[in-house]
Image 1 (cartoon, helix red, strand yellow):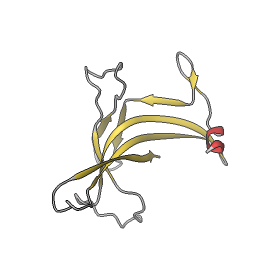
Image 2 (cartoon, helix red, strand yellow):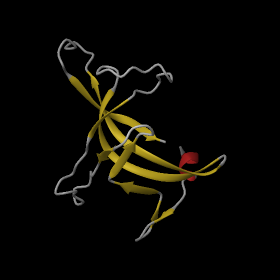
Image 3 (cartoon, helix red, strand yellow):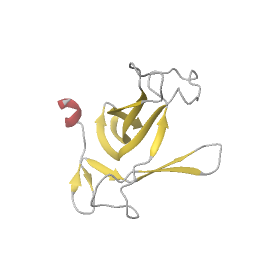
Image 4 (cartoon, helix red, strand yellow):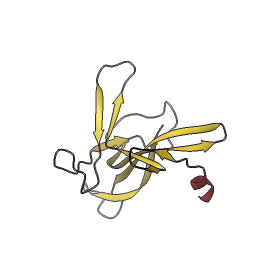
Length: 131
């Protein structure tokens, strides 16, 4: 962990320098289809977006699925809330590289004694990198 933290690079901003840049909108497009999808995240109480702390809900493909092996179905995705959108730069073996990331909370289907119903268990443990 210490080696990872040591590889982070300082990034300048208007007021100061820091390791992370925060942003509130992720724009997702497609190479073949027109239009974009916007995902908003404004988690800070004193920084409102149109009067609210918006944190959009999204779904993602779970990790560990082989390329070409994913089939989009309601029970094959993770349903998540976007908690924070940020970017950082780190020195890698091949030089400086920028990473755009989303911290998300994952809501998984409950697998306990009440699994027959539509119960969800809230887990806040996954960091999904958008690279």
